[in-house]
Amino acid sequence: MQRTRYLALAAGVALLAGCSPAKKPEAAAAAAPPSGRDAARVETGDVVTALMAATFNAEQQGRILNMGYYMAASALCSDLEVDAQKLGRAVEATLALGAADASDAQKQHEHDAVLMFLGMSSGSIIGSHAEDKAAFCDDAKKLKGGAADTHLFAAGAPSAPSTAPLPEAPAAPAKP
Image 1 (tube, helix red, strand yellow):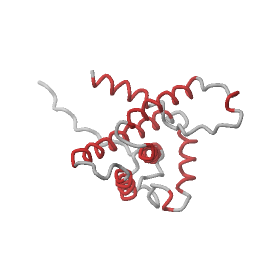
Image 2 (cartoon, helix red, strand yellow):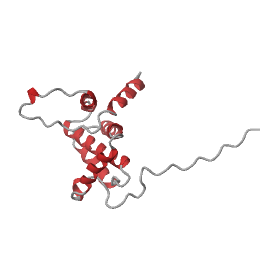
Image 3 (cartoon, helix red, strand yellow):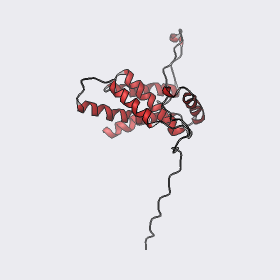
Image 4 (cartoon, rainbow, N blue to C red):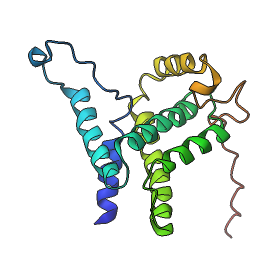
């Protein structure tokens, strides 16, 4: 049952990617509610936020989603790579925002949950931008163009692009 929940959640999170808080005009009451893919993203965002709320506060949730964006960009864009040291510092800073009196077991749970939600958020962003990869990568490259302390990308060209082909598996021996 738990596996079914996770699979359903993963499918829903795939629609979440690319969501950002909607900019509400002053006449927001007159605006039409989101529909189609946008409505699915909002609903999925609500589900993911509710799941994260059991462990993380709102600021931690935002940081996790932000890190997921950079991980997704690194996976989708062959000329972008996440700087592992920056990402590690970002994870530690996110965990530091938790309860100061947390037990070792709670701290381990939060660490494990960060990793799980990073995977979920980056996977959902990858899934939702598969059709508009070029535009997504162009936007991500603009972030890399900012000051080095404002993004999680590594300087220079990626050392091992995630788009590299997988090595061929050795051929199985022939059966007599």
